[in-house]
Image: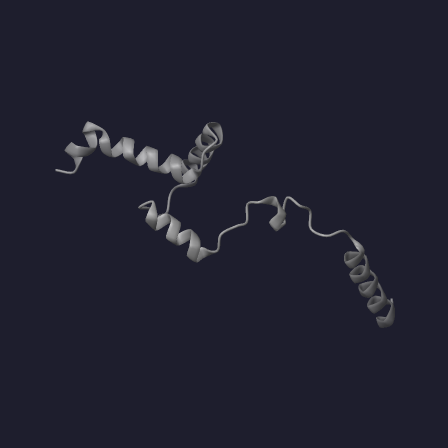
Length: 98
């Protein structure tokens, strides 16, 4: 193809994209659930007493956590939080720290 033909094709693609409908309502502001920006989300997390705590886990553990979150229909953070609370509340955890 000639360079001019390639440019024509690019222009046709752009025109077709412009002709397509607008963003579906489920993704637009009309959906009612506008995503929060990072600053607002951080303030909400701080008000709940949440602290960001990055860590590295084995892939098998992450898969199990995701599976449990999906089964329980909750957020991954909630599953990890409940698992950690249960582990820290167990008698073995308190004797292991001594």
